[in-house]
Length: 570
Image (cartoon, rainbow, N blue to C red; front, side, top):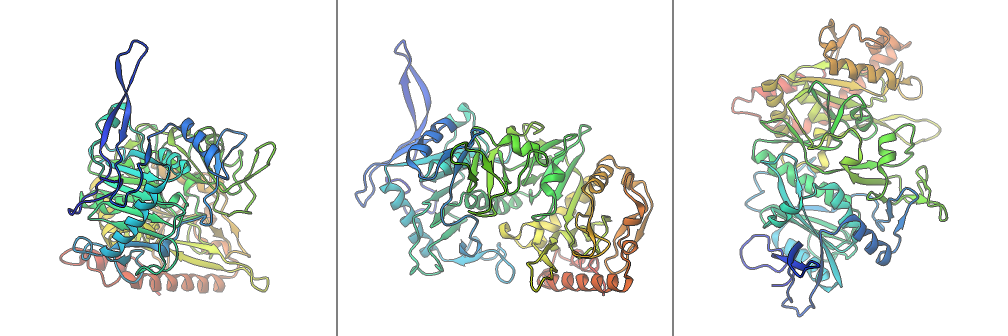
């Protein structure tokens, strides 16, 4: 059977794995590793040379020798380019709508799941597989997702570039020699044809890029993009489907644990400080981006980190800076041709410059990446409107409401010299990767928080004393003091009062933080402007949430009613 060729049953048919043997110096057979066998396809394509679970050093050699734009930087990282696509293509991501997914998945307004039919998926699949079979070699990674040993997922990634193979080597959990020998059939397979485009005249196609997911076949096909993040986030989407089926909550969050065993989850969109605040030298890092919360506790889905690099500095992010060494992948960065020193401020290729490295490159990473049930759930918002308190304690209904809202505010571009905040909402702080309706994840979160006694918090890392342009950014030192008080439990012992409109519980004092800034109205000199801005933001929240108001949670719908009542009143 050819590489990727299938029979009639709707199961993933990837190459079988056979033992590869070599002789030691005494002539005795010994197992080196396992290699998938590849046969000739029905289109008479030649045999494909499979490079299976290569080491970083081997992948460096292939990239440097055969892949244009690959270089070694001064710190030993592999710098490479992802081609025309320097970020994900969400409008080109599609999911097969069939008997398996029609009633399960979130479809329609606000959903990231664009539908396609099975026939179109199979056309794209055959196009990708035929392309891979035409190559002189392909790279195959067999790896795991989820550090929870009882719920780990076996994944196989088939790709055309050494860069992609090294990227996934870093981002997934690396199997031991014994685990690889007993790997067996994967639970999910990605066929990544990289730069080879889809046929734009195929039904559903809107560009030469297509990222296609077939849940029943347990397969993903990538055409027309070499951006490696499509593989990482594609597998995250798969976990957002598979884990809730096992009553395990999948989360787009950072996670760390204190020396006393207290776990905190950090949710936040770009620019909110999720990476900065979850990286704490007094605590151990469980993971920076993707997690599961099961009946046993939390576990990292990944085996690595995918950090933004724009304006990276040793002073601000020493752990990330030091992790960019031999074995790490640097995407789309600029560097000096002679010294190979990277200029992290250079945006000439893209602002979305990235580094991918194994999580053990972070000194305080907890290996294995698992922990007990979270004690605190921290929702981060960079509120450029300047009306949300620096910290608020949330009840369960409020936690669900703000979790589904997934709010932050970005600073818009300049127009006639005026900059205004722009509200951004992303359901569950990761709408682009959700498979089920957001209320399902929110209900699971509330249930787990209630069972295990976790407390919800809303932390504003944005503006105080006015909106962007008139107020000032809340000092990082103050935010760290707030986070420290959450971790220590001292913030539960102070007195609280409720704000107007949003009904948020704000503390009377936090050690190391000026009390006057804890209630944002105190910091605005123009109270009328404050009230107007507060009502404006409340209206934006209500308009955004209309997408979710008609979805029933539970048989009696009580949870839905409580969640809606937890929103702003204006």
